[in-house]
Length: 242
Image (cartoon, rainbow, N blue to C red; front, side):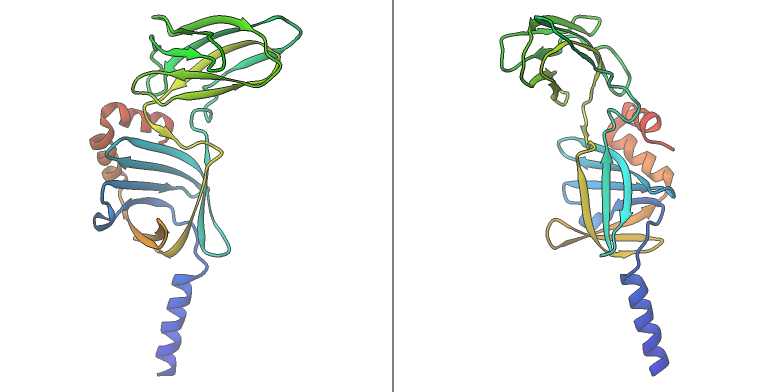
């Protein structure tokens, strides 16, 4: 009896404590899905990809994963719009009277230039709409305070770009996306209840336990195509696939 009890306690201890990152792809189990589902893709080097599918849209993110000493899973996101140096905004702070804005607006997934994008400074009456080349150009008085450049287009996520004081020139390419992008300021921490080679159970949404079952890469790609279409699948291949 003592030997059996020792084995049971040892099994419980190792399944509940000392968790580690187990590489693989994990999908929300059917019984927990509701109106949304998630995919975690963990790699050996501690990086991860994250996909959130809801009835209103799709969220995407990538970053660094880590198991904390209290057996919690920490996900630190990087800004996927910046992770390939795709946003290149230059600002020159010199003594001048005006600020010149000259930017190109493109779709993040296929780099198509976007026309009809509204670009404005909310605190002023200055702004413009991008032309058929995706270019937006306008001038305004220089400011000694921070300003926000607001970029809006129907069907795309709104972008607020901070302009430092006394900036005289702002140029470059800005990529818009139809998806929610988790950026480098965001971090998620979940309590791990169980993590083995076939499933991951996390504490989510207050006291709710969510089970994620391990799936194959082929099944993951099928889900992405079903939920995001061929364009979304190509986005996965170019921005996330390792």
